[in-house]
Length: 219
Image (tube, rainbow, N blue to C red; front, top):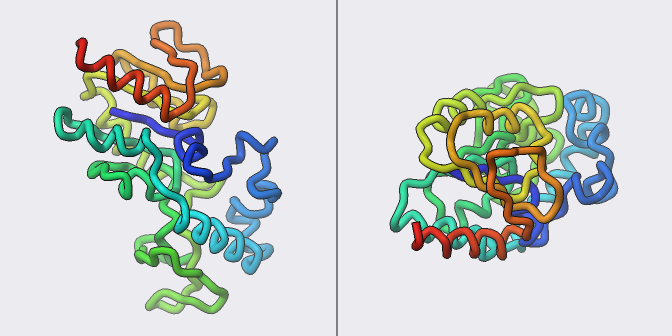
């Protein structure tokens, strides 16, 4: 099982909150990533995610994405990602759980079960679901529940190994997934949360995943 965070996508050129002092493209999280922000300034929030979608359209999967996909030829791999992009899928991975939603989907603001694939198209004020409610990004905003966390928590204990790439392990509930008793490897150039039993590779995603994957042949 592989748990990925913002550092994975950063090497494909996508900005992250963590690397910009709590800002994402110069926007505060409280202005663009909360239900209150959407209620307060719907146009700003929609425009922000439309821009992120356009940025994602031009981004490409990096070597780490492709390596994880290639490993499916030899291993059964589940990827649990905190990222909202589709770079894992575009890199070739077939089993991906998105904890924080998906940028290329929209959902009804009043009927959350109504979810639509929109690709890289914009969502504009006045775009509605078939029941007449405004569409919003299919993103788990701060303060909202994480619907896929139970599915992820059910899979982690079945893993033979947990690989963590590009996350500081400081965001819950995702950080709680590493409490299970399985071998853990962390790939991150920074200072991940203290995991005394984990092997730590202090490198970026591409270099670190390459080193880790090369070592699989010796195990």
